[in-house]
Amino acid sequence: MASTAGLSAWEKYFKGKGDVEVPVKSAAKLKDVKTQVVTKTIPAGTLVTLLEIKDKKEYLSYASGTLTNPKVKAWLPVKYESKTYLCDIDSLAKPKESGRIDLGIQTSNMIEGEPIKKLNVFGQKDVDCIVFTSAKKLAEVCHRNASKNLLLKQSPNFKKSLLDYFDTDKFDPSQIKWYGSISDKERAEFKYIGEISIAMCLLDGKKSQQYIKGENPFAAASIKSVIFPVSQSFTGVDSIVELADGTMLPVSSKAGEGAAASFFANLFSKVIENPKYAPNGSVLKKILDAATRIGINQASLKTKSKRLVYEYGVRDILKVSKTQLSDSYTLFEEFKAKDGISKYSTEVRSVFQKLQTKMKQLKDATALKNLDSSTTVFFSKVIAEELNNDSASIKAIEKILGAKGYYQVNLNMKELSGGKIRFSVVKSGEGSVRIIGTKSAYTNIDASQGTVNYILEREK
Image (cartoon, rainbow, N blue to C red):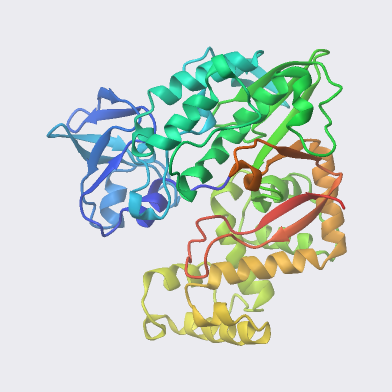
């Protein structure tokens, strides 16, 4: 999954806001400022004050590692109990004014404290996993962790609903009772519980048929356990259903019918790994050529996908040569850092004009109105449209999905609002694929919700 972290998180949520009081989103370690030694650990939900960092240069003074990485981590100064410590930027939740809430109910937090087993998972060795063989045991663990989650204090009705849902004395994973007034933002947080809900439903045995609308590929299976990989380095599926005969079925959980997933992380990485997936003359091949030109490999794709969007956008969409603009990513860097066309370099001003012409040609009035901040979104949407219109690329993508052989389980968000827990299932390679641009707004040049995405839908 694409995420905002490290430097990019600081720039998006904290830059220019002075001191910011914010909760930690998971158990956080605090280091002594002088010795750099961890001296204290505070639980999720504890409030700390992130002290003002004036600019990127100061942020990087606290960082280590590859300083050009937009997600480079840093241990930043925070005030806690009248004393200054250092805290990992990625341990801090988003400020409330960021537009959404973070209640810390991600699967890893909800099953925290259970024994870790090292398993070999789909070619990856010694992956840290937590295994459940009982639906009620999973509910019991989630109830325990929800009870002590301090972040949930800000949403008391939502917390009460969750605790009731995980109450093993009245266990029924097919429905949740919503108590009192619960906002749409709070209800949307339940998407993180979706992975746990499907696991409880499947472990609940024969009853699972009532939870899954339409075809249920798990109905006739004898399910032994549900496995949750919790290693930070594991980039595979959300959970694994283990059958009695040892067969492992990978499961990808999504919120909503046709939920979007990252094109680069889940599909294009396979193209880089095996270029045979990119037919000559296809859009996929053109994107692969763009990645090759700027030295992006499978390992660097995770942090450089936006660079690839700009390389393809500048070279293949706008047809700008290296002579005209030597580094395509300069466009993003100047658009983000400088205010107004008069402050851009001569080369970037020329590309700006080509962008205007292209947006007019494609009749994208919203992109044109928001230039220059709309550039990342515009490029992403054009790439998605080109892929959709190229049958060779779509066939190759469907082949990749078929080879992955996972089950996508979608939580029905509309029925959830009425308290019903329902899922639909589609197996990769058996549904239809539609590429979509970023879910970010045209005004978000960082495209913080990802760049190019895809939807896997059950064929009608």
